[in-house]
Image 1: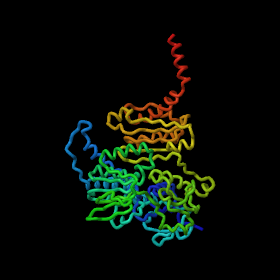
Image 2: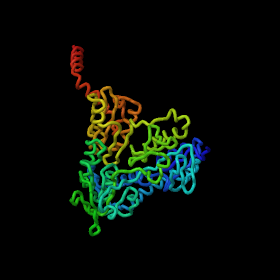
Image 3: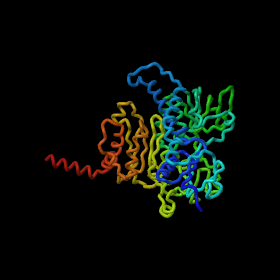
Image 4: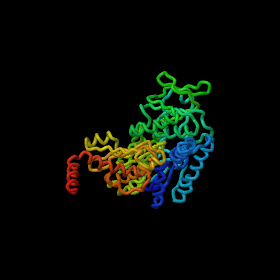
Length: 478
């Protein structure tokens, strides 16, 4: 049966745009279906606006704390509406790269509308039945709203509304202490909004190295952010215009606004995946290593499949989807398979937290005693001393042969510094390669210093070598 397109892509976020752009430039016939705006959550409600707001908050914080370096100013006047204006300006500057006009110029047919599968080979939108050799589902995710009595009635914000605020809340509670809650909580607090973070666990950032998370938690407390660990709100009530939050019968916070940051759920409900023969669960669409669904004609990537919910991972997955879907007659037998061995990510708090690879526990579970944990504090890096940014460390996890198993960093620009380790892991370079020459004084010296620790640690344990060298040099001295 003849089909209309080579690829029909459903969802114009990071993953879908990468597939659409590359496929069209390879002269495939491509349709891209999006129900709202191209660019996805990252451009409009995620990475771009959040990092813009974080930067505004950091500028405010540095101005307020210049006395550390002998620079004194009057307390800065923070105009929240102008900070949000900066956020919107950044979105406008980046948006043309993701605009419908750009993609139409590449040859992509952009269709706006909400559609669904009608069978295993057809997707219907705006009354049109689209057929293709392959389909790609990249519909992303949305904020998970916890079941809290009275929350809907009281009203709340998610990442989809918070960057459209024109006035600063008088006070703010964040339900959830993961990356979104911690990033936005610190940013709002630095822009003059008292913040309370409610964490259901015994610490913030539960997916990060516990020691790294503790450094950030202590920084938050030093700035005056209230952190309530082991606190899961179960009721919200509006009293005299204020939102009161309770947990286990105890009132834990009274605020003007609530921001929900309690995780994400995949956007799958409206697609009628059952008709397409695609298996899914509350965690997302089921795919194999080639990112094929249970219908071999349909592929999926990005947040909608669960797993690593990061823009850069969606882009990475999109490359595999592109080749496997576009060249399905060949790739069906020899598919390109995703490899999640080296997936870095960062949380852009101040200090930043970045990680890649295994945790200490995962490394010990897999390799037993053949694990070295090399910890280099930023306090031992001269550039960090010069900038008064000595809190934090790099924890490098290796085997005895130097194989890098993982890295966990908390400190200044950790999200930038981690890439040297990512490059080493991707290319299977040993930790000793990190000791190559680094410009002095730079923060990147933390990587070379950590790489050197393996040799120092092994030498400290090797008493036979120490005794030999002592005798050797004694002999040379005569």
